[in-house]
Amino acid sequence: MHVKFCGFTQLSDVHTAAQLGVDAVGLVFYPSSPRAVTQAQAQVLIAAVPAFVSVVALVVNMPREQLTELADNVPFDIIQFHGDESPEQCQQLASSVNKRWIKALRINTEQDTLESVNTQIDNFASAGASSILLDAYHQHKYGGTGARFDWNLIPQNSALPIILAGGLDAQNAAATCDLSIYGVDVSGGIEVDKGKKDPAKMRAFMKAVKRDRWQNETLSEPSNISS
Image 1 (tube, rainbow, N blue to C red):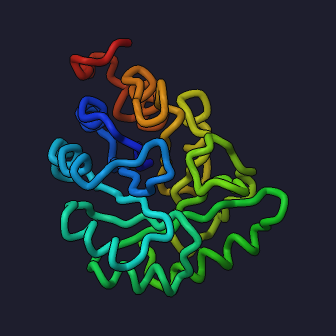
Image 2 (image 1 turned 180 degrees about the horizontal axis):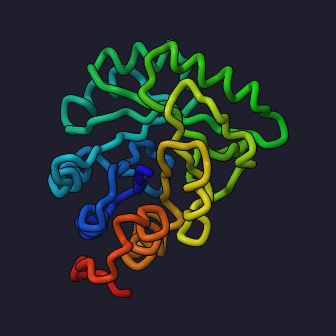
């Protein structure tokens, strides 16, 4: 199971996440988000990310000119389109900056069905997405709500690797290991405040998901993490 921690704003939190073995770190480039960072902040944070850890840039309906400027100044690896972008728009935008990309789908438990979710995934797969992220729908927000959707709407045979987000924390993370997903994405479930991570919660989350890594209780812990 792959793990992405999202919404970093603090350098010390990036260090901790890397020490814990996170697979990807997400930075939010959406000014309306309380976890948003500037390009200058992102440059400092990314400098602390070691090799083999992916940097994901979360954008929401970002115009091509702004995305080009972002890609020119910030060395991220993958674009996470988290707005209303169509498959064609995602493909065109990502191609313009030569980046791989994933798309976040906001799943509405009251309206979506397995068929509708699969159809959306198929459309983004055809457009070249590397993975799909499933998050909970909110009428006025594009994510980061801490809400869960009905996991029964997660397809068994998706055309793309599925990354699960929405309302995850150390208490329910272990249950995701039984789902037909490729990875998990968490933000609020590892925080003490929006954009400020809790080292103990990060460690507990990793322990719940990466159980094989943590089977040996003598595994050394990062020096700045309390049990």
